Image 1 (cartoon, helix red, strand yellow):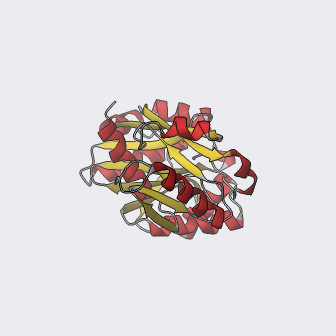
Image 2 (cartoon, rainbow, N blue to C red; image 1 turned 90 degrees about the horizontal axis):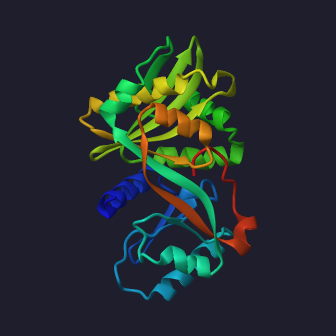
Length: 267
């Protein structure tokens, strides 16, 4: 497992899910988004400029989140800097939360494994549409306040995006988001309306996103799925995706009750 490859994917994924506030701290990136989604309200700690002592950085993180009424939270993966950061946070009382797998596959494998056996019509738009967003919110049971914070994230994505919608007649039943950056397709926001689940419709969206990205010269795909989401993990296994590494949150336990909503299938 190459730390360089992990760092590369973590950098792409952070850019693909941009928080409203992003403040650099000696190689780290402090992110805040009104408490909505863990990734957008956590420290990205995968670099170190070497200008501050670690204790200074830890104190600055806690002050940053305290000012916003949020728990101090880190997104920890094997590329975290320093390497003993996870152990240090554990010793300081930070609690592990939301273990997540980062899964990868060649784009050609996903296209082959997800050949559509369905008459669903898939449309991929280059901009966020209301029908896509409404289906996404319905599929993930996203409330009004959280919806607006998520909408902001989606509108801030600077890389090439594909908002995929699978339609049955006039209804949008499955959605997914593809973000193309450098040599990768990142897949996010996969959501199926409850009455259409377990019919393989999400595989049709994956196939369409993989085809769309392949036309842009992309060779590989990555996505993030929480380890306790057995349904999604089984779906992605059928598509040929395999876990490359994992990450988790470390949250200051005493402050967990002040956190904002963290709903949804993905961390």
